[in-house]
Length: 85
Image (tube, rainbow, N blue to C red; front, side):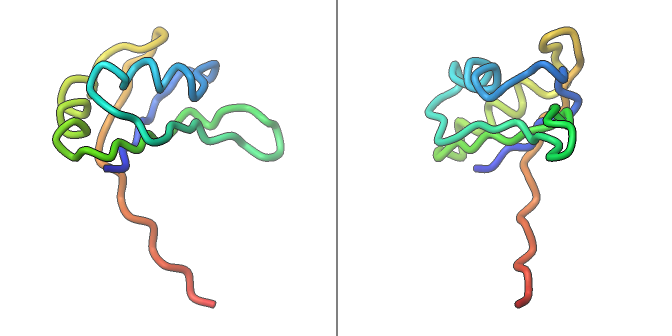
């Protein structure tokens, strides 16, 4: 399950996301999206959890909670549309 996290503290990194989600189960990947021009966080990221039940439990437990001084929004990520070539 791909999970979208918004309203992240701009100092948050992938290790912070990993620590936040680790109590809920296995994490395949965690990433914070970075602005290419400024090399700073855009304030959102994604965590991929292979087990959907664990992912759903993480969403329910973490949505609306405080992390690093900010109230985060946690939801299932929308699938990316296939780009046409």
